Structure formats: structure tokens, C-alpha cells
Amino acid sequence: MCASPVKSDPAPLRLLGRLAVALFLSYMAVALPLAAIPVSILHWPGYGNGLAGLAVGIAFFSTILSRNHAGVLADTKGGRPCMRTGLALYVAASLICALSGLTALPEAARYIILLAGRLLLGIGESLTIVGMLGWGIGLMGQQRAGRVLAWTGAAMYGAFAVGGPIGLVVYEHWGIGTLMVLSAALPLIGLGLVQDVPACVPHAGARPPFWRILGTIRWQGIAVALQGVGFAALGAFLPLRFIHAHWPYAGFGLTCFGLAFVAGRFACGHLPDRIGGLKVALFSLMVEAAGQYLLWYAPTPLIAFAGAVLTGAGCSMVFPSLGVEVVHRVAPHMRGAALGGFSAFQDLAYGATGPLAGLLADRFGYDIVFLLGGLCATGGVAIVLAQISARRTDA
Image 1: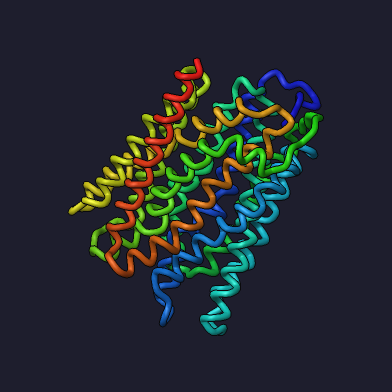
Image 2: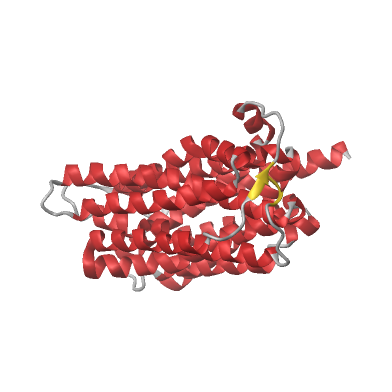
């Protein structure tokens, strides 16, 4: 994505750290309302789990549609303008969502406003994450792409760990409108933090059609999509399962997941670059599957917390591990488009899981969504095993 920094810096790791801190704060715009939105909607007469899941998942739909644009922007203009535009959209989207807290409006109008804001948030997320990856790899170099991917995810899911329970507390005390205003304020701080981080010069080269790039990375993408089902199920429905079962600390499961996720990124972020992405992805998917099956079985909140920890630890390294494989399969001037397409597979899983899992929960209860997540992670294990076998055959 970037050939070299515009101006040299003796410690590019510090610059990556600043980008990660900015992303952590800014990603609160995504994390804070994630658990509160379905809880809020379920209080509206006539609105069930399906519509609540749609409100969560629709942001990922617009993210999918904008991944190609984000990747092209990062490849041609650089990660810096891409990420900064995404952060600005976080602010605008959160302010639109804040209008859904106006109780004078009918529920239908509030729901439409919320969907509009969530759609814009999805575009902002696409630009922010692809821009961060492009900017970070440009600063650090391709040989440390795994670390950039790991730190990006650590910032995102660190925000998820902190933002989930905080969002529920803010919603319960001050309502959805106040929560969304807070979600708009934090990306402004993020914009200030990245203001003087140097840009990078984009690579030159012919760019094949986006669909051809997707074909090149399709198996990595399908595997990361199967991983994403468990994450989306946990993010949208674990608090609801606690509430429905009358268990305490409904938001703490998200914290368990997020802390395990971040710990995994910092402890193992170097492994894909060192031992290869497929080996790390295989083990990670197995751990995620175990966590999801434990959540499906969990008869007590303590066992559910353990399942959330295993899910977080497993999900932690799947994206960066398979992302390293993606980076190695394409030329430098196509990294942004390739990583955008790779992320789109995960976005598709996120977007589809919310409504589908909501419909399943309406019919079979909240525990069934974690069985779905476990089966999908098991499918990801099979795909990665096939990729490892094919590589050994080629060798």
C-alpha cells in the first residue's frame, strides 16, 4: 500500500502505537452501542429479536459494499486519508443514531433513523480499518504485516471489551441518545491523535478487477467468515442470554471475550510472521469452536464466562493469521484491495449472523446461536486443514 514513509522516523513502532490508540478510542463508536442497541429495540412494542439483530447487522452490510472503495482509496491515495475519512464518518453516523433516542418520534421513524446511522457507520468502519492497515503496513513494512494486523485487532476489540459493558451502563442510566453522543465524541479525539502521523507514498502498478482479487484470497476469506459467526453471535446475543436467564453481570461476558482477545493479540501477534499464518489460524479456530460449544452448553454464568474467554482467545489470531497469508499472495500495490476484500468476507458473516441468529433465538432460545457459531468455527478448521494439506502437496 505504501512504498515508504514520506519522512523517516526512528521509531515507526511508536507511530503504529499512536494509530492503535486512536483506533481504540474511535472504535468506541462501534463498540459502545453494540450490546445496547438490541436491548433498546426489544423494549419497543412489536419489535423482536429479528429486527434487533438487523439493526446490529446492517452496519456490516454497508461495510461489505464499501470495502472495494476503501481498498482502492488506500492503494491509490494512501492509508492516511482513508482512515481519517472513516473517523469523520464515525462522528456523523453516531450523531444520526442519536436522533433515534427522540421519544417524541414514532418507533418506526426512530428505527429507520437508527438504520440510516448504522449504514453510515458501516462505511466509516470500512474506511477506518482498511486505512489503518494500509497506513500501518506502510510505516512498518510488509515483513511486519502480522504485527500491524494484530495491533489493529487489539485496538478494535480492546474497545469492544471496554465499550460493551460501558455502553449498557450509559444506556440504562441516560438512554440511547446520550450513548450515541458519547460515541460521536471519541472519534474526534482519535482524529486529533493521528493528525501529525506522516503519510506514505502509494505503490504504483496495474490493478486487476476486484473480483479477481477475491478469487485469489477466497479460501482465506471463507475461513475468516466462518470465524466471524461466533464473534457476531456473542456480541449481539450473549448479554440477552444473561438477561433472559436472570443471570447477573450481563455485560461482563463481553469484557471476558474482549480481554482474552486483546491478550491473545499482544501475546501471539508475532507468531504469524514467525511460524506461518495457517498453523496459527488452525489452532485459533479450534479454540474458538470449543468456546462456542461451551457457551451453547453453559448452565451457569461462570461456565458462560469461560466460554466467552475461549471464544475471545480463539477469535483473536484468526484474522491476522489469515491476513498475513493474504498479504503474501498479492503484489504490494494491491494490498489495500486484497485486505478490503478479505475483511468483506468477515463483514458478510457479521451482517448475516445478526438477523439469522435473531430468528433462531426467537424460535429455539438464545443458546442455539452459539451452537451455530461452534459449527461454523469447525468448518473453518476443515478449510485451514485443507489449505495446509494443499501446501504440503505443492511443496
